[in-house]
Length: 167
Image 1 (cartoon, rainbow, N blue to C red):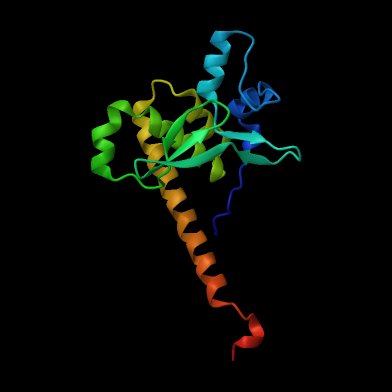
Image 2 (cartoon, helix red, strand yellow):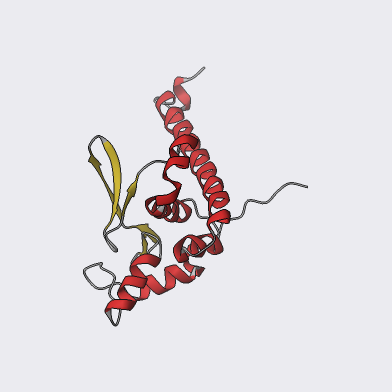
């Protein structure tokens, strides 16, 4: 049997619903009090619902000391704009992996992972052992998306003249 491709709906994610409901007109996250605002900022998955109901990223990228860094407009979080983290670097920074959690939350939504995975990264609780497995799975999917996008760009460059220019 062939494996069906699953396309998950990010809008079903609890974190996405909670954060989307608390966005102000200026695009910032605002709760009823300071405690709720802090919690909602931690739940931010760096995407918002567009006017047409589509899911749109709220991240812009800047170069800081030669490294591309993503900044979220809603919650103010910053995280590295990498889709691949070497094993040695990851082992050294596992104790302070909060910034990598922000990266994985963003990539999990961008790669249309299932809502449970998005909620898992958004909740950021005590599940450190399982977190590492899900990180590797998300990074693997993100690198596959990278390869697919590069192939598409290469195909467009080779096919400048369209079908009538080829023999």
